[in-house]
Length: 143
Image (cartoon, rainbow, N blue to C red; front, side, top):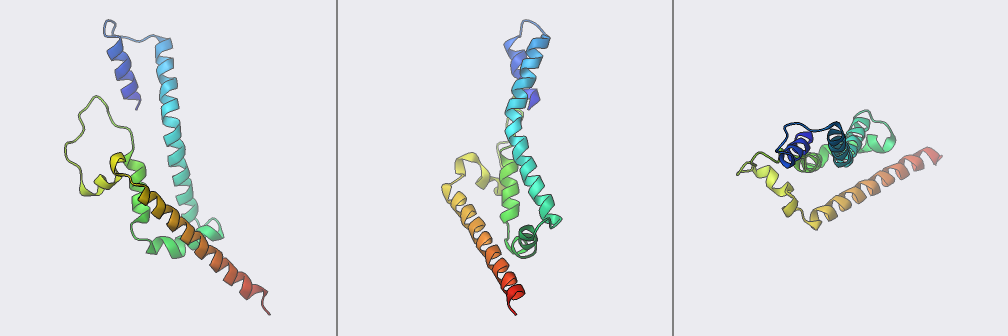
């Protein structure tokens, strides 16, 4: 967060109450470099969700119609993972308690098994989509 960068800079320069233009530009460049990967991640997720809701192509139509409604908490868990690693105000204390749903998305509790299950889910979805495409094509091509 920009506030975190500014607070660190002001802590380093306690003798003066202001920052120079060069220091502010440096802080803004560092903030941009820190935030750009997360912004790209959020953009990609949002773009995919919007296209799926708009049924942009056949794959997304099949995903939105047959997979997502029956996938349980997969979509909510993906969104929670993205939100759980968001920046926070470093100069304020973090809450001592956590809601039960958030404990499984902490960085320390992330297991490689969850990554494997995500890969398996994606693979199963792709296989199902290929099978549906094959059935559609075979019906169209057969006399």
